[in-house]
Image (tube, rainbow, N blue to C red; front, side, top):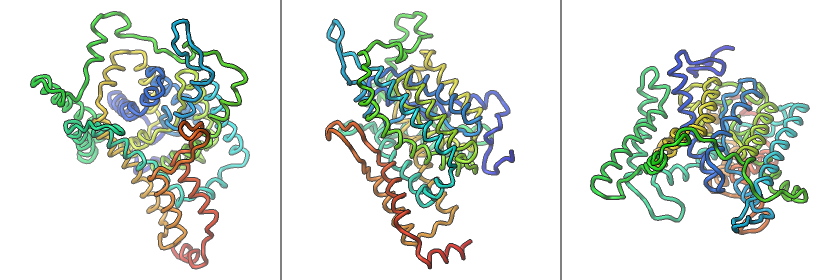
Length: 468
């Protein structure tokens, strides 16, 4: 395969040195870690199995796509509402009165999601993807990619400032550490030589973490909690009493947990919870692969093919559902790492997946990564999420989209405002909806509809011909 000029390592190439390979892989693990563990934290599921499942799912995806797509898969936020509802289906209590979640209903739901993905993949295998490219032209995909990045901006800022929704806990020390991480990442990528230029996110994370250590030491020195950016309590607690499990520990996999027994009559309820959302995340899957295709200058929807990427994602979700209860999805953070580092090597993705699996069993590693303050990942995310949005702009420029054409202006406007503004559709109980279509999917659907309804005028077509 001919090497792309804009890449340091192409998809089928490998790092020359083991040390580089190691650092490139660690970069991907750090990029996805915080978002990955947020899903189990919200739903109350075990964290370690989710990390392991992300690695297993990624290996499945790479295998199905024949190593041609440098995608990392991890836990999806789109299924939070269905997951919570499934866990609450027909719940019972144990002898002590403790509520037993319906883990089996959750596993069945995720297997259904995998089946939907494989079903859609079969249809695409039969009818091809040309119709999809007509349905999703650049004027739709470009703004959607911008929405994917910009819609995550609030998450990046809340992590950076240490302010959660509705909370008043702004901490300037957090902001300083996050900005140090951001500047270190940018400077390393721009001015770094050799390996340093290829691992900007590792450098950024380390810089932010060490600045957090300095603030924390000051906090202990002056006895002021405000300066304590890093919480070392998990590390201390783990080694209070040193045992074998202080070093090696088997995660609490979902299939091994005891919960409420699943009733076959609940299958229809589970299907209504998960199947509609599966079609939504398929749209997001396509958007992420279009974006990555643009970054690596290779159409992944053609080779390895959208049918293979969907099957890989679907099987990964089914397995992940049994292992940890969370669905797998492509991660924009890792797509951005590929774009910034210009390292598209699938072998790096494979090693990152292996590291994730090991982290779930090696307790000290798990705990140390958990101590990375959210402000550091928030600072790095300013670049990660911004890069995703900028990729959408780059795509529009590359394809020379004419914004003098009112059709293009309307499509882009609706996608950007509905997506960034957070327009969603909710069905079921207003306070606890069973089905929720995310703003990203809504913006894409609105863009598709406008593109179909608004026909090109004759003068617009003439300008397109002249431009070519």
